[in-house]
Length: 64
Image (cartoon, rainbow, N blue to C red):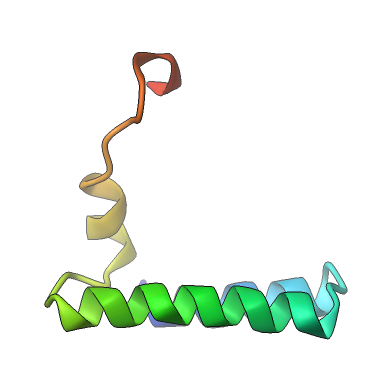
């Protein structure tokens, strides 16, 4: 799944299922689209599978 599709699904979820306020939804969407733009500007993958594979745990306590 591509990041843009995941963002769209998440925004719909917090609007419909969680009933978040309009301001909260707009803020989440803005931040997530900024992240997407950052990835595209630096020619990074926007495929969720490759994003999650490259993530390193921040500490040994957080290793699954």
